[in-house]
Image (cartoon, rainbow, N blue to C red; front, side):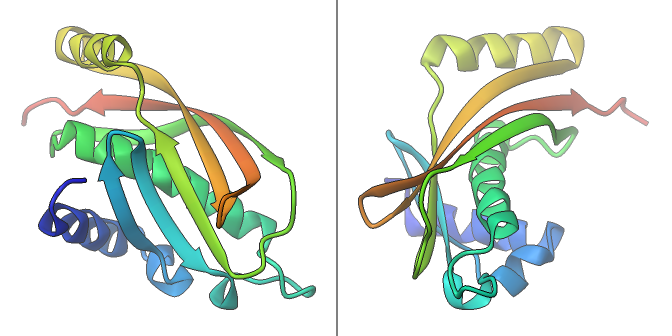
Length: 152
């Protein structure tokens, strides 16, 4: 796992640039060989049944993927956006929405970085698992695009 300062930096970035993350109670909890993980309490993200709201599950999963890519790039001249996504909801979540974006294979990341460097634009497919405890509750598959802004 990366040091706590890296996790705090990522969380501060998300809270500053995506204000919804503060209201959701989103926390960055890990960045290691397995992937980038975030969590948010159902208490702040529930529906009328007092289980996790589907939109919140989708947002937390998307933020796990976005956070992984932001840490991977650490490039203030690159904008990261989601191009498309698909989520499957498998079971209700009762206490904590925990999402981990799996780290892409090294070759995929290298190709992504190479395209971004050469063309100023690159895309990558990411996979996120949403779990409560050890139970899979949802899966998100998404394509993200990074675009390097032209120097002014």
